[in-house]
Length: 58
Image (cartoon, one colour):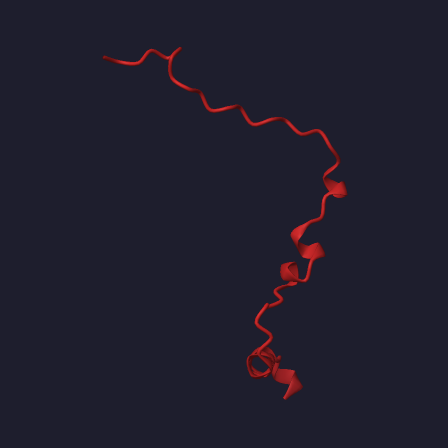
């Protein structure tokens, strides 16, 4: 027995949102958006700093 299109549950259509996108917080408004790491390992931080230091800062 095949189901008819009327009897199948349909996915709700996504709602259109007309609010101001600048009212919402963007990912870069948080520490996490800037690549902050939650672990807080100071040795890893120093290693990352030394690895990513530009060559003219040696």
